[in-house]
Image 1 (cartoon, rainbow, N blue to C red):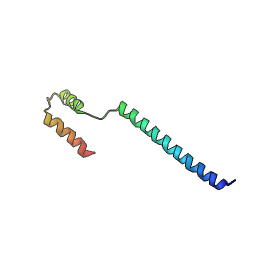
Image 2: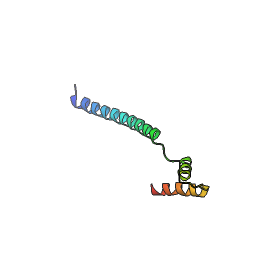
Image 3: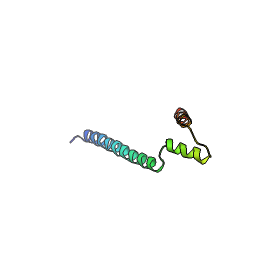
Image 4: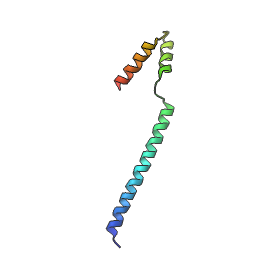
Length: 72
């Protein structure tokens, strides 16, 4: 029996299984985090302006969103 070939095959198989499990785990973690902390949207920006006592225009909301995209 050729032990070198079987160890190599086992190592490649374990590497593949580790990559698949890591990918699925990371995807589940990201989905959970996005559910707990959703990205900011236009309604949140409107609520923020209203809480400061201002009625925002659509141009102001779009400007805030554009500034957030540019800063990332």
